[in-house]
Length: 188
Image: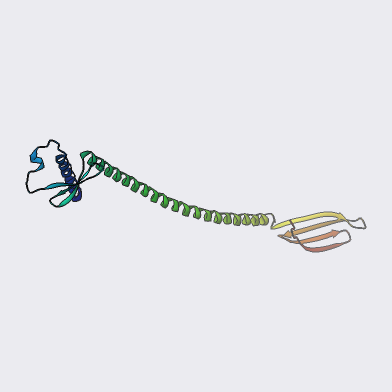
């Protein structure tokens, strides 16, 4: 793990402050560790409620803490970094979810439009089918015929030809004959 300059300086200051705190508290520490150079002067400025000290070393005021306090501080920093990483991952997941949701909404809107278009096409095909059924039900050429009688009880024959909807009939009777022309108009 590589530390940047400010982290290294903070670690050195933390260890120096702990060492100064130990020296000031009267703990048995070799004198070579506490004062190698007579020009370095350390003076306790203030004792804090949490057990830390403000110490002035060569005119600079520093905070001296115990090793336990330093460990807790490093643990809090590590926990903070872990929480920030988790938050970044969750933010990434949330952004991905929003993107997928927007795409889903767009796809759903396109599908609904497509369904409407398909329903229109189906209706067009149904209409076309009805037209074909109507045309298919109407023969192009047919022959028609019938038998009957008139008032004088003479038999009569009716013979006709139909071309699509146009009808031409011939009426034949023993003493009578004639032709008829007609049109077929379907109602239902």
